[in-house]
Image 1: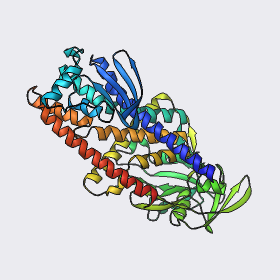
Image 2: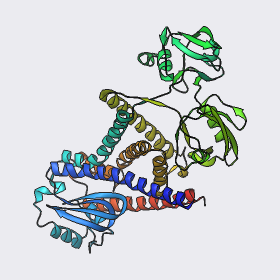
Image 3: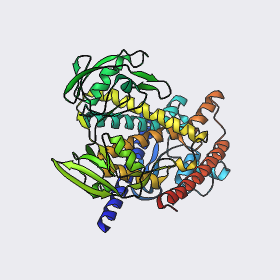
Length: 474
């Protein structure tokens, strides 16, 4: 057990640093490359914040690895108050604050050797805008590349079974006369070999947005008798998707999380679960419901491996599956196969996944702002690390999906119009344009940025405290 705990801790720390490292490096690289593109003088490129423990100067820029991994910065000449904030905690703090006569003179003295035309605020507004938004945009591009790359390398997920494992009440499937155990052979005369092929044949992709999907003749094998059932899909207005009411018979174990209860029980990919807690099961959602409803309760699971019946007891762990919702989990996935796709398809699917993640994140942020979600929905560094570690315990691909999701979150958060964030810089720039090219007074920018920084630090402190409370259970 000591080794297990130690290995879990190492996995979590590695996953956390890899997640933060990727998104921070890519974000700061966006700012840095656009500075170089427009000839803006970059003093420092730092991964991390606070004290500098590794530094090397190449050309005009000092490249730094700082002690605190929660962020980074690109320090540009003539950046004003942001240079003072970036110096905080580096043991290179200024003697006087910017906005005062002494502070302005001190800042000017540090930039004496830099030509004025290479200062940030000497560049046209459109160039500064691109510099400010380049970091968040690079996070967005990172997410898209990861999503598309994962689809290209892993393939398109599919379920290689065509037997019905569940039927929803008052659904098109029930109206058509389907029964659990029916094996679907054809849809409108076309053979089907995967569950995805069945769904696509019943609700063709090109018809999904038209609002009209015709009925289909479905040939099934029921107890060695061939039957043809007429299925009419129905669009569920409330849910926003086409409803069939069919569930696949898939009780085969797929990926099993390392160090989880299912792994401890000995379940392996390819095992077929036949009963849970004395109940025969015909679908993975049925397995999940029993496990979800019985946290911290010993359950008897029966499965078949290579024709041999095996059984054992497992105790689901109580885990938060969504904000405020606790359920039992043993950490195993249903069985899938993967169909290789071309680059074009991977790009389309990567784009769709990126847009979908943005929509979900915006909706969650809206729920948070409108107070439909409580503060317990907020995750800080501890919970991010915990989530990253859990994803890596599943697989490296799971971790990369999490990195993509996290990168999109940073893309959106950094564009919020809060001074000290990239969105705050954009706000000041837009005000400058509205004022006819007259910048917002530096003193006002300094005050607003300092207030934004204080509020951000207070919020981060609160989130860390909440993290400790959630992770430790106290």
